[in-house]
Image 1 (cartoon, one colour):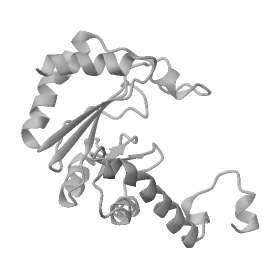
Image 2: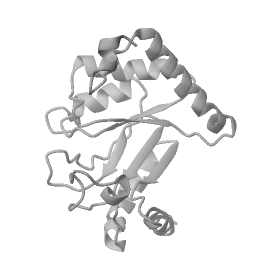
Image 3: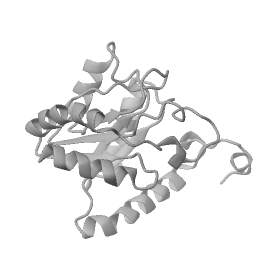
Image 4: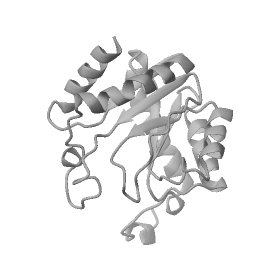
Length: 200
């Protein structure tokens, strides 16, 4: 690494030599291999942060991620609500559909600047729903652990809201993955079991 890069507080891809970027991608790919070999890998989920705004450069970057992992399916989750908002939703969904990239539907706290609405769309033969919980107290709180942020147990009524949506997505795709990210104690496992019973 160049000495001036080492001294930076925040490091971005543009600051890193291309050979180092290539090596990092290679190591990431190798880390996926055991899961893939054991047939335990459905998709590789790329979660793009709130500062990842919609734009041509960003769309090109998403495609470059796909090109970096040609043997795997990648799925796209946006944490910036302007991707699926009223202005950009159609273009975003069409971009993902044109490139056979699964769109990750989310359930998360609403009413924040960062809140992504629960858009129900299938853009490939695989659909994904991530349940982040609805903990409005911790969602944007600074200085807390990931576990605290997602400390939330869905009620039966909240899960029932999703049953028709999940069934709708399942009817449009070959596979549907439901991921509970409310990973505090056993809350994700309990809610996943409840959802499975509701869908049965």
